[in-house]
Image 1: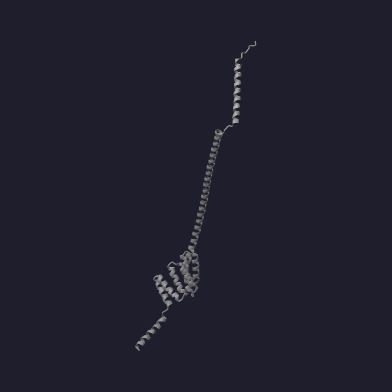
Image 2 (image 1 turned 180 degrees about the vertical axis):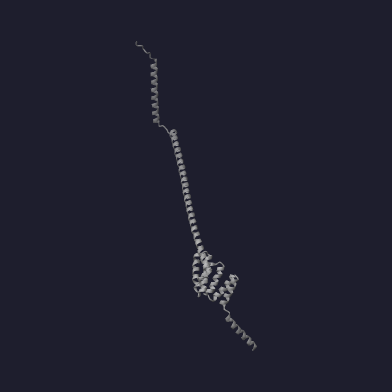
Length: 252
């Protein structure tokens, strides 16, 4: 009887305690504990355990987004914030989500998106000072960013023009050098051709003067002409001699 009572008592105690254990709340509480201690990876483990019990729970998704924000994984943070927004049921959680999404964009220097999120948050809590401050700061930084981008764009354009001008100058110089080389080559070829023609002409003249043969008939004609020339010279000499031997008679 005593043994039966003990067994019955244990069963009843387990039955009474079991309903008190809520995996969603318990794991969320443990996750919050580790989050406050800045043990973000440990907190993330318990938040995911809680999410297994309720995959669309906006508060758990919000907590997971905050962990990723602290870890600097902003894309993951935004993903979980957006999932949380899909199932949000109260303005307080909605405000926190919009505000933190603004902070996440702010951290990435996406000030235009941050401004949009802060404005959404202020629609839910118009007098929230931190959100107002962040909104004004984001607007200021956006203006500065825009000025820097315009200045950088102008500088890039100036640099592109300078590089384009330099390329054009280099291209023109290369073209001149190429034309100069081509002209030099043409002059060289012309000189070589002229030298070859001069040498060929010289060789041809040499062959004409030294190697040309006189035919027998031509030789006979030349000899005959030479004989006649000599005969003519002989007659002239005789005439001169005869003229020198004659006496001049006086006629007075």
